Image 1: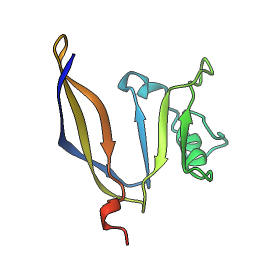
Image 2 (image 1 turned 90 degrees about the horizontal axis):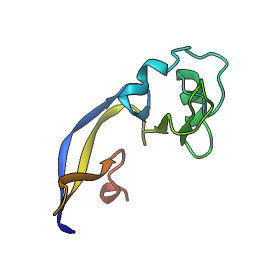
Image 3 (image 1 turned 135 degrees about the horizontal axis):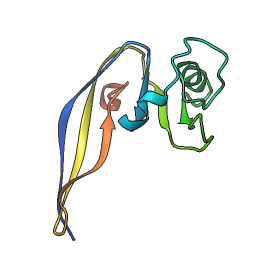
Image 4 (image 1 turned 180 degrees about the vertical axis):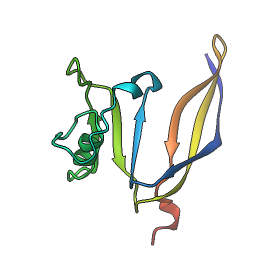
Length: 115
């Protein structure tokens, strides 16, 4: 049973490519650094990440290269581009599991500051 929820800023993500990639660290060695090669949307590579963020959605899922399966990572444009973006963890206190991260939030554009 969840007894408490709260949010804390856990740090910042520095962005110098106008994009952010969320992936499991164990998959990083599979990421293909093919510069601006011939990879398409959804390919788990630099070129695939760029192609995915250039779609109308500006974001999407990257697939595993060897198996072709989904879920290698998520990539997105970062609002107005390069920057130093705050990251928040939303926690729950669970009677059985203790303190757990329920979700992460990265603020690219503070919606309260938009006119």
